[in-house]
Structure formats: C-alpha cells, structure tokens
Image (cartoon, rainbow, N blue to C red; front, side, top):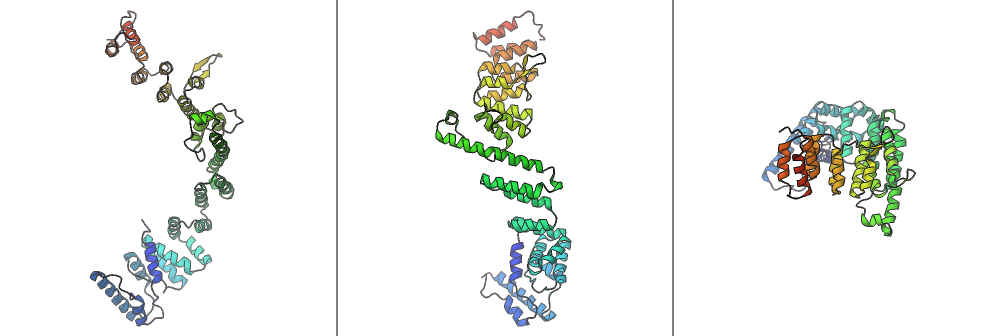
Length: 409
C-alpha cells in the first residue's frame, strides 16, 4: 500500500533530535540508542555507520540544517531523518514540493503531516489548495486512519463538496440503529445533497432510500410483534428469516408479496404501492411476485398475475418475463403437473418449449411439440423411453399413427 510505511517514518522523524543549535557532542548523544536494540552484529554495524555519518555531517555543517533534497532522499530510502530543523514556512513547503516532484507517497504524507502540526491552519489550508497532489495524499491518509470529522472539514475547505457528501452518506448508512440511520440520512440530504446542484442526479436516490427505510420501520415493528404473539398463522407456518430493515426495494417487495399480498394500496406493506413509489419495472414486479406466490403454492394467484385483459374485453395469458422463465420459477416450487403443462404450452419458441418439457418431464408437451414439428424419428425415440401402457406412451403411439400428420422423416 502506498502509505504502509508513512506512520513508521513519521514517528521516526518526530523522535529524532534537531541538529539546529546543538553541539556535535549533543548530536551524537541524541542519536545513540540508550540500550542496544539488537544483538545482531550486522544491525549494530549499521547503527555505528549511521552515527558516523551523522557525526561527519554535523562537523561539515557546523550544526546547520541538512539540504532539502538530502532529507527527502533519506525519507525515500528509509533512512533516519529529522524534519524539526526546518522551521520556516518556505523550508517546510520546499520539502513538500521536492517530495511531490519525486512522486514518493510516503515522503509526501510524512512531510504534509509534519507541516500540518507545525503551521497555522489558515496558512496550511491556503498552501494545500495550491498542491492538489499533497491534498490527495492527506485525504487518503485520513480515510485510512478514519479521521472522518477532520476529513469532512478538509473536503469542505477544498471545495470538494461531492466527496464530502458521499463521505457523510457512507457514515450514515453504516449506523445500525434504524431510527438513528434515518435521522442521519435526512440530515445528510438537507445539508449536502439538496443544496448542491452538482448532486441533482443523486438526490432522488437518497430520497428514495429514506422513503424505503420509512416504509420498512413500521412494517418491521408490526410484523415482529405479530410473530412474537404466535397468533398469526402465516408467521407460524413461514417464520421470518431476517428483518426487513435495510433490505433493497426488490427484496422488500418480495417480503411484502409473501407476507402481505392482500393488503390494499393505503397500507405500507402493499406490493402495488411499493412498485409505484420505487418505480419498479413490470419485469421486476412480475418476477418477484411470481416467486413469492409459487413458494406459497398459490397457483390461482399465479394465474391472476399472468392474466391480462384483451382488446375486446376478454382475457389472455401474458408474461413480460417470458413463459420459459415462468416455467423455470414454477418448477423450483414443485407445482402440479397441469400447472406446469399449461405454461409450457404458452412458450412460443418451439425449441425452448421442447427443451424445458424434456427437462421437467412433461411428456404430453414433448409429444405434442414433436408432432407439431413433424419429427417422426425424435418422437419414436422418445416414445421408446416411456413406460409401456402409460397414458403418455399411448399418446405417443397415437401421434405416430396419425395419418393426417405429414412427417418430415
């Protein structure tokens, strides 16, 4: 990770003693470990060599600060360094500019944190605005260390309102308590989204999130009490596996189709009301409602869902998801053979109908489809696999003996 060593390097820099206004003796003493940190001869040699280099530099400079380039290079190389000797604003930002030029994230982060602690906020903010690369590294550091309040202030100061808004939204959705989450989301909407034209496309999504949570809370409270009372047969027969809180709109629709399918539109749990408020498509609604009714084995409800009015006042079967998908959903819930047969026959694509009929062992549909395809060889082969004497076997034989069919083979 880009900043995996920044903390270690920063702590090293802050612990080192400044070379300013110190004697050579003080420099050596301040850098000498009080107790041996290792018994490894190689490490000890490295420590001695470092102290020798420090002594030589101190002699050469007379205790003055080390050049900016050299200090930045030490940070990059993972060597010991000190930033305390750089006291003027110009020196501090010279360090930062050098680190930015060398594209080293660890150096940029260490220096920017040092400057932040040692300079007036007004000056720091002004200079940070002029250095977006440094600002990005500081933002990443704060995110990694969860300095969220300070990060929010920083984003606001930099005019990065969209990022500040998404940060607040992320904080709001992480709250576990539904009431507190709802309150936080509402504050986030008013403070960050509604007043920001740049977030006009995201604002309706947050409003919808709030509306969904406002719908879920009373449903959850009511259903939880009903389940605990033990008097509602639906909850006794099908115990709830999870709370409805924080579910998606589609999952909430499924829950309400399952437990509250008969509620009127003035009820919060009404599936049709959920569909309208959250603008779910016909496919989303039919797929979800069909899955719930099939699991409940409400076959009449399935017929009702898939029946629509025709042009001249009659009715006809219609499935916006396709009858092949209808059959796949129904088959997962072990429907009566006549129910599955009814919808298999409504699949327009002959090959698909034949494939699913074979898969679901709806023999009559296979026989009828092969006869309509005038494929005698396939029908003979399929008939041989049927148990002799059964209705299906006799139906296959009757089709093969039908002289009105002009077979292709």
